[in-house]
Image (tube, rainbow, N blue to C red; front, side, top):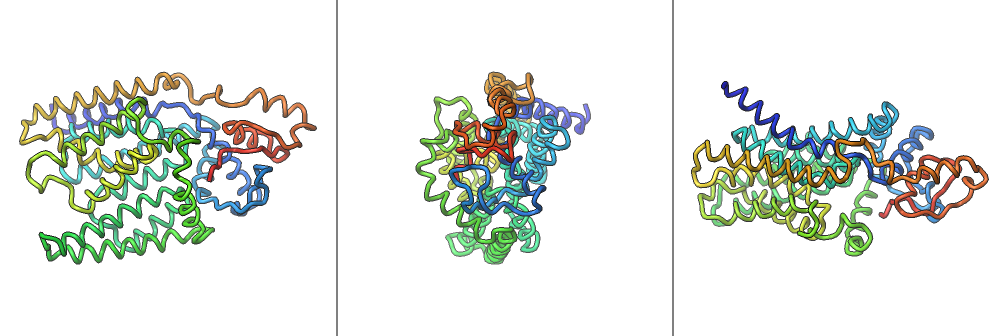
Length: 407
């Protein structure tokens, strides 16, 4: 069989392993207040700056750092309702995977190892594979981290100017650029003292400075950083309120792929072997920081997997000069395990059976209020997961107690 056909079969196997992630139905309660924000922006031709959805916070300042991704979600909703949102979700997840595959291909990683790494990433992404604004951050992070070289200042500024208007996950991108710069400085002044590292460090610092400047090209300026600072101060209290901010746990099957990525990274980085096969100091530092973040808060796990799997899985399968046939067999086992775990995680949540979780929404309550306008015009108390949908369905008359915007 021709090499190109063999490679195509491996990529098809990776896509099949990712099918449970792609087929996950939509159920994130935050989706609805994102759609409310998109509709309000289109109605008023202005950026949200004060709360109008919740009567308990009416008029309070609001930095809507996700306004551009909200418009994208609103456009998908307008184009095809749930089918449009599902198509957008699948397209973004495939785009992120394409960046990962492109980066591994550029480093000369064989198709079996590329497919295995993609399968592990797909399984790890299942808990976050809803129609979320965060999907844009996955795409940008995968694109940024596909190689060890920092982008030039102008592209970095443009990339982060766009990213900062889509999702606050741009902070992970700044972490990566900062780690690259620190790693290059270590190579320049550490034991190795590489002469070229100082020039690379200057390039990385220039890219980092340009990226920070680019993030300020948003309607709120430094306001996005004030939100991030407040979030950092309150992150310790979030695990008690929101499960995804809790630590990784072996008792939770959705966390198993992240644990597998952590174990793979530790094994590859600590086993004896030539140092040239290990990541350079900057990537190694970023792996350590993201690994610690993922261990403390499972929401950071997808970013760790996007960074770790394309490097650690090929090295794990390569072993100490293992023959190609053995590496291919290991990759096939990885693919089978990833697909099996993906099915175990996704099937109980409705994958392949529905496009969205209608049972999560207060459809009957919203219909009742719609028939009773004298009630819909009053302030309503509601559970946390209902507020976004009620506000979207019954706007502009209804203002809810809370709608999920915990920041």
